[in-house]
Image (cartoon, rainbow, N blue to C red):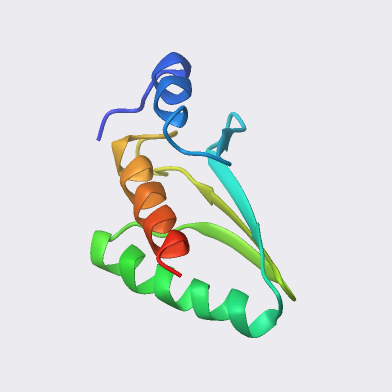
Length: 95
C-alpha cells in the first residue's frame, strides 16, 4: 500500500470531522459518559479492524478513547487508514 503525501492526507482529512494529522498518523479522540460506553465502542471498532486486517494504536482511560492510525508496513498513512477511520466514524455515529 502506497504511503500518502502530507497534501493527500490533509485533503482526505477534510471529510473526517475531528481527525488530524500528527506526522506519525491520523488521530482523533472521543469522550463518553463512562468506561462502559468507551469500552463498548472499542469492542465494536475491534471487530471492524479485524475484518479489515488493520489495527489501531489506541488508549483508553475511563471515558476517554484516543485513536491513531498509520500503516506500519508503509511507514506512514495510507488509504487503509482512511478506510478504517471512515468505518470508525460510521460506528460512532450509528448511536
